[in-house]
Image 1 (cartoon, rainbow over the protein chains, first blue to last red):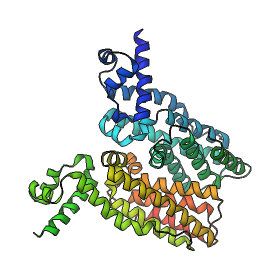
Image 2: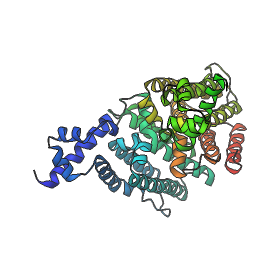
Image 3: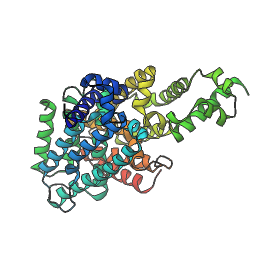
Length: 214
Length: 214
């Protein structure tokens, strides 16, 4: 197999195992076994499991970055916020091992700690900018302190919905019900501040998530 | 020193050290040193650090239990919810090491895992009952799906405000600003559903938290 393909295989296999069993319970031998390559071949590509975690985080970041590039000058429609939230929750679900043991991972890997703190700051700014964009478009009615707290609440939900869901249902992440509940929860935290017709649209949308898991 | 006093001294010292440095970074030797007792004396009272963690959790639980005993038949005033929230955040702040590395601790200590999952279920029920009590008193206007999602949002905030605050400010828990922000955030997630005069009261209360840290 070509080198590039082996590297990709290691990453795909690691992501699956980390998500399924939790990163702390997966060893590099386990990954090599599952990918059907020798441990030596794995070490040729990655010196340690931490290196695999960092590479997976970079992949996650590359795909997540466009979702936090919300300028504070944009006019936003409620649908834009919904779409941004949906994609964010979906992508985090795909890389859920990162968020399941966040404090663990960042305590162990300083590079990840720095990168994650940087990402969270951009996410917070982006949540604030999204709400400001809705305000500029006349869709939302909110004062600046409420906006700050709502942006924080959205970020809290985006950061901890994965371990939160697993506290109540350890297998809840295996189907998409945890994800749809999490999205509905955030949508319904925004709806009380929206003007109609967006208020009704968002509420209906949240109820659709609750009744028809994506 | 009497045995009972030594046991209490170990618990008090452990709580301080766990909160300050994080439980994973504190050893029993560190605790014995700080309490100015011999390691042997510590082991006479607690066989392991996990036993200290479990005993501290029991202390936390004894004090927290009354805060989650909200019957679904009560008529509740908005002030009751505020008082319940304030005490919950305060108590969790006092035992913050438990919530800082929740998934860590529960993965390591099965007894703690069971107890914590049980507590979370009671907390969820209690949040739901509180909102129902406000509904019965005619203070809140909310449908059952919104109520379920709002109860979950409150619980998410109650469970993760500590690591969330520390992601942005590693020393944020040393003064009370993280706590007051967290309380204000939850109050402001409830206010849009309240009727006046409670809506205005709650909003003013949240703003007081934001401007005058407790």
